[in-house]
Image 1: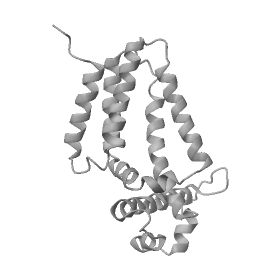
Image 2 (image 1 turned 90 degrees about the vertical axis):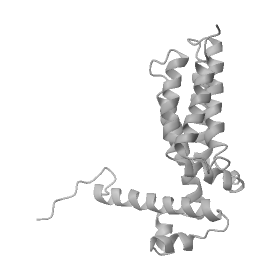
Image 3 (image 1 turned 45 degrees about the horizontal axis):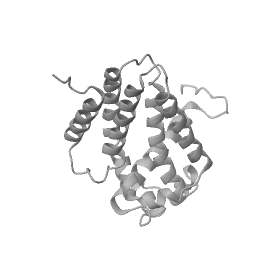
Length: 206
């Protein structure tokens, strides 16, 4: 007997929902490779579909346009940033604890380095994207970060250190993704962590 499928609140079976999500992720992964290797402008939806063994119509079922594909890839970075900022209010009370937290964030970012390369190589195309969700996400992330940096329970010197350490992570991994693309993950991670720890826990002056 074929097992029955449970149905979610909008009437789509869980199996169908999972398959839909998996297909979207496969499309995004292929788009990421092609946009990074040959550029967003030079990549067509037909190429993405052919790489997957799909028709263009199958791509359009999941994404309304090539711009939507690029936006979805960019919003992956928003998701990672939101996940990180959600952990910043959980009893952090010292720069040393922030150093440990940022170690984990650096590891996560290194697992997704291809997204940073995409950002750098397709900056002009990304800057042309104007989407309500996109702008709202930027505002939300900015507001969450402001809450961290204006938390009066931290000494202002520590807040400045935290801001500089965050800047080191973003500058070393996100904004410079393409510049350091030839540096192995382990080496780049070590270098960025060394800078972050130097900012947050500088050696005592003898």
